[in-house]
Length: 194
Image (cartoon, rainbow, N blue to C red; front, side, top):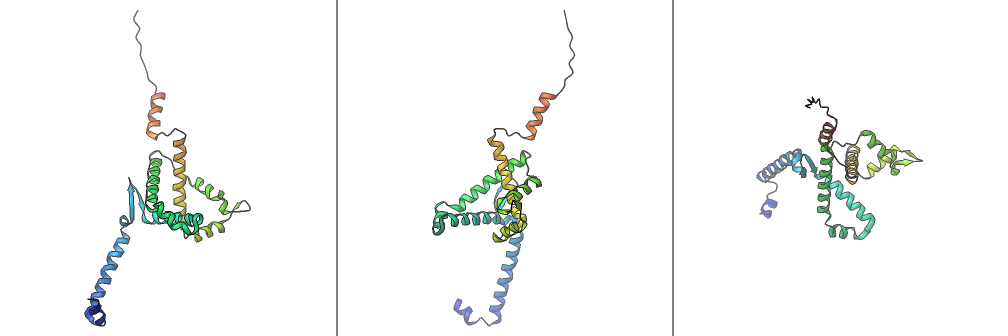
């Protein structure tokens, strides 16, 4: 079959068939790219873990393994079953973020900015250096918006873990019920019989 195609590559019918195959592949490829649900690995409630988030986490794990284990990094990643571990970790993070959302916890822009401005990797003479920040993003092939979204999610995960560790984690609804129970005023009429 391949020999037949090779021998007749200049014929119009072979070029027409190849053209149709290319058009079909491009059409379905573009529609799959536009359909973001195709790029979803796991969905936790409404929170979707996308392929690009998984890839960034896996690349980070590869980088850390290369830094620590040098030539044995690939063996380490395989032994630790890193792809499954990352999916598990991202799923747990999604559950934490969902819990934070339900309980009304957020990371403000000020908290995010403070974290970035106080990161020692971005400081020069004790002051935030925007060039270092931009260089780090460029060296790691990261988009600023994606980096800050990931950092915000990480900070929110830390915040909910801190609340869980403190042993006090109440939802807004339970706080409102407790407030109403303790601070609702009642008018009571008493009739006394002797």
